[in-house]
Image 1 (cartoon, rainbow, N blue to C red):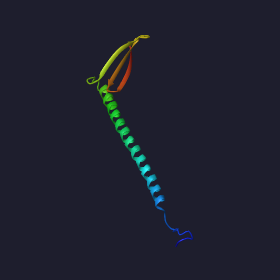
Image 2: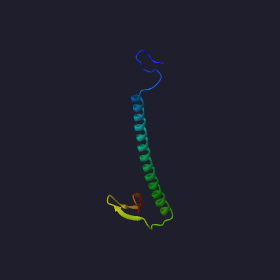
Image 3: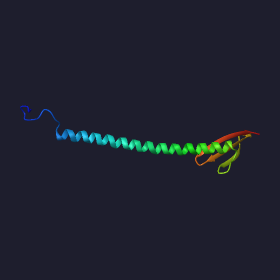
Image 4: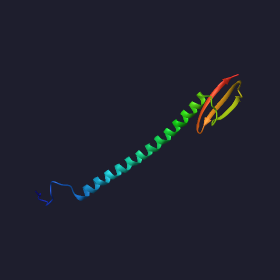
Length: 98
């Protein structure tokens, strides 16, 4: 059925369909970018957690191989010694009283 202007009342114009497709494409592009960033952040967090678990296990086993160990006396507290155990970018600090 057509109206007095000669236009069909029951469908969409080509311009409306193209605009809808553009909006959907932008939404999917944004979604895919967010998912890619989330995947990278998940992988980074998983690797960091693995290093934390490795350092924790080494300290519990008292096996300091593969770890960097730095010991120093605190200048303001001469009876306290700071010991830093590190593996990569993960570190654990312990203070010992002498």
